[in-house]
Image 1 (cartoon, rainbow, N blue to C red):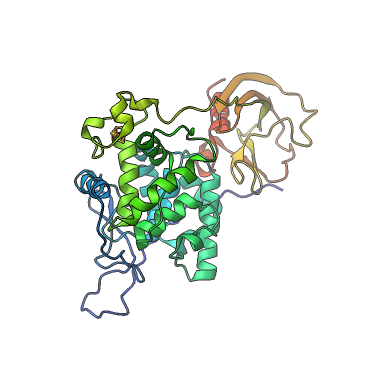
Image 2: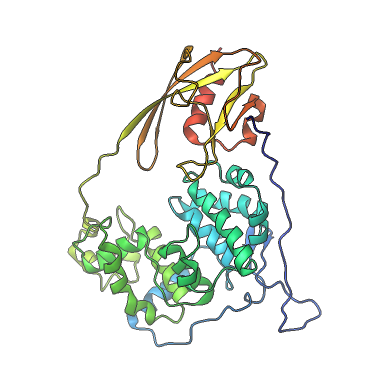
Length: 395
Ligand code: SF4
């Protein structure tokens, strides 16, 4: 059955809410976000309902120096605020997995513009969500965000759970994201461990465990536990660790001279801190070969098929491949070339052919005949997009 074109993304306004506890003439939004001049999302004047801060503690010298460094070096990122909104932090943390900050910022703004809060995301069509996400890769992140938003809307009235343990139960929220949201938004004393944090800890401890080994995370958590427990703000501590890894304790040429821990770091004392984390033997990535066919009708429309369910790249659109039922015996037509693309867990070599078909050529299940000018309306991942460009740029 052929499908209709996905509907355009609807833009809705940012949700605002009044505080039930305080009455003012012009009450500030609670937990709502708006885009300030310059495109920066700013928090409301009041923290979202239920937000609390960790009680004051006595920081040890190491933790205090890290937090003092963060206070003066923290970057002004659009999702940061004195009163962070859990939805905004959630979206940013999911986007920042596998994506550099500079790249994520544009996508983050477009996503928040299209889906400003959990009700808006829960009500959206998955095709619209994928189209806004298009180009960012790792599309299961977008599918899980959408599914989790629907669960939160249905089971929790549109409000994310407060604790890391409860957040962890939602699709797509792992230990890292749960800890980030719970610590940054609710002051929960739970450490985040990403690649940046692993690197900093590995250098601080001159760890012999490779960062990719299963033992690396528990080992880092053990080192972090007393330090985050000593922090007046666990959320700032976690952000400081990540920021230190991203901007100072970088994989190559760490800038130890500007590190708050330069006098106590054993890797820096060695003179060659980049030796840590130690490397695990490189894994070999398999290569898959496939054949995609650009079936073109006389009116110029091309057949696209939708990948189904929870598969890799599920719900994304692509060219039909020879592996599909009904196409194995099809003549492949004219060769257009080869597309090579590296996914996270395999390399793809895609041979691309073009075949002119009659106007009554039957559609495949879950497919659509699409004119080239309508391609932008369909979420299409990198490799099929490159194959379509090959087809469109050859006579
Ligand atoms: S002193 Fe150097 S190696 Fe040690 S944590 Fe700081 S930047 Fe990393």
